[in-house]
Amino acid sequence: MDWIKIIHILCVMGWMTSIFAVPRALIYWKREYDRIGEFGPLGDLTIRLYRFSAGLGVIALITGLWLGGLWGMPTWVWVKLALVLALAGHYAWTGRLVLRAKRGVFTESDRYLRIFNEVSVFGAIAILWVVVVKPF
Image (cartoon, rainbow, N blue to C red; front, side, top):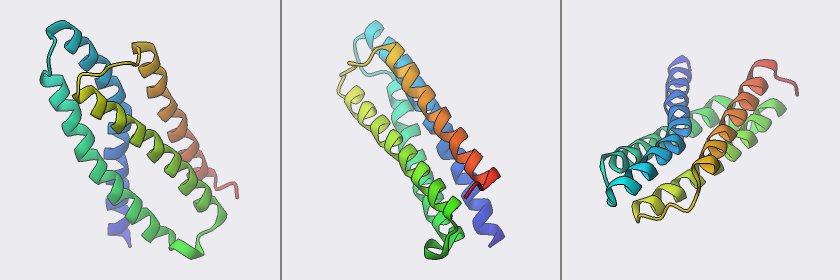
C-alpha cells in the first residue's frame, strides 16, 4: 500500500504543477501569438504540459480511490473527492482554453487568466486542509 501512496503523491504533485502552470503559460502564449501572429514554441510547450499532466491526474485519481477504499471511505475522504472533482473541472476548463488557443482564439484577458489561475490555489488549500485536519 505504501507504493500506491507514493505513486499517488507523485502524480498529484505533477498534476498540481500543471494546474498552476498551464493558465500562466496561456498568458505568455497569448502574448507570443500577438507578437508573431502564429503558433509558436510556447503553444507547443503548453499543449505538451497539459497532455502529460492529464495522465498524471488520471493516475492520481485512480490511486486515490484505491487508497480510500472507494465505498468504505470516511466522510472527510468524500469531501476531499468532491473538492478534487471541482479541481478536475477547473482543469477541464483549462483544457478548453488550450484547445481554443491552439486554433488562435484568445478571448480571455490576461487579468481573467491570472484570476482563473489563482482559483486553483484556493482549491488546493481546501483539499490540503481536509486531508490534514480531517474535520468530518
